[in-house]
Length: 241
Length: 230
Ligand SMILES: Nc1ncnc2c1ncn2[C@@H]1O[C@H](COP(=O)(O)OP(=O)(O)O)[C@@H](O)[C@H]1O
Ligand SMILES: [Mg+2]
Image (cartoon, rainbow over all chains, first blue to last red; front, top):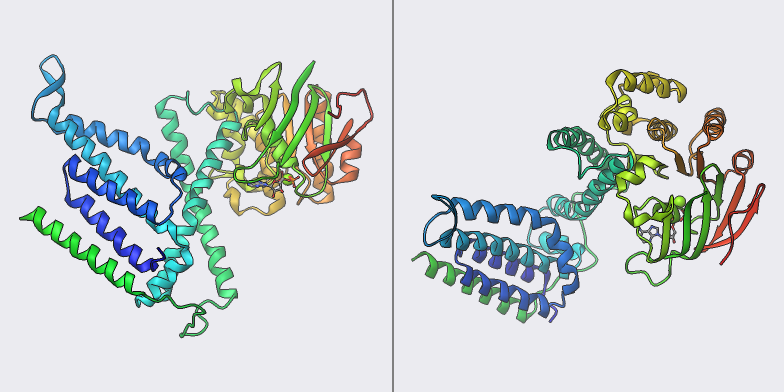
């Protein structure tokens, strides 16, 4: 099915709202299943999922542990002496948090099934100012660059003979603190260069922009958009009342 | 003794059908100066990245001082082999030029006085003293290159790999670098130079490996042989 990028954006918003509203693992699993079905319908390549999830793993694990410990209640499953460590309730809350994150990431992956150019076009036709839409576009484009930069720096540090895995925590923090400023500064430099290049090519030289292509809604777009927003609103309503 | 050895190494970049490198067999002695040349995109940088473990060989094995490279961590490799990236920006990450030169020593527990002395020496030698409080990424291309080289040399590794170190250096600075490399070569430290600069290569290298299209094309020796085609 070839849906308009804007329709997919609406679906992403709906799914994310549901993920935030629901708090039980069962419901969240249902939302996740729906998201996966959509991803498959839009021919998302499932072999790349791992690559997107990996950076969030440690965050998810941390949140899971914290939620497990600090949401006591229900049957105690593991305890140190009199202190309950893992409870039934904590486990539920912990797994909900993880599922919620996974749903939001998976829903966002729907956005990768069309080109970022279409994304900008979609926003513009929704009367979002071009400058703003372009900013979003650049942010999307630079995210992988930023990530690569981080990896580069970490590699470079190790190649100077430092065993990052083995240095004590205090020193590691000092190293990371030292790196923070140069990384940000480097990014700012890149941003400035980009701005200069854009102005050289006449970005915003004329107030009116024209576009070669126009996105057009087809009937299916209207139907899908209407159905998914209506369904989401109803589910939210049911959940709240 | 062979210091670094590549056996039947091949490498593919992800999602690429054509190999970046195939059938690479090379040996490097610990005290030898080898140059690698070849046209743009023939795989020189890729080859050196394999040698320092930043990339993993798709096929074949690489040995460092007798054991497989995969047994070493990046940090261990970095302490033995000093690597100067083709793009110096990639390896400058500190807030000042002086910090950059001292980074490795500082974090490996040398005492502050020694570190200070070494920083002073290397800044002096590579004429960076005037910039010692400058932000590394604001330097000019040639200055960045000199800083990257100084930062790596300050660690005093036993082997060096320099990826196009003369790009961006003026004739005088090139001469300085050459002299310094000769000096550490006399101390018995080997190196691999990637360079298109024929005269620079001719004055330094004992062996020239010529690459083309991901393969070793030939090998030009001025001393005993250590290089063979598969
Ligand atoms: N990160 C990468 N991903 C995919 N292909 C790459 C990457 N880096 C280099 N290549 C390709 O591998 C080949 C060899 O590149 P490289 O080793 O940089 O050559 P050289 O240093 O000899 O100029 C080139 O064709 C280049 O396009
Ligand atoms: Mg190169």
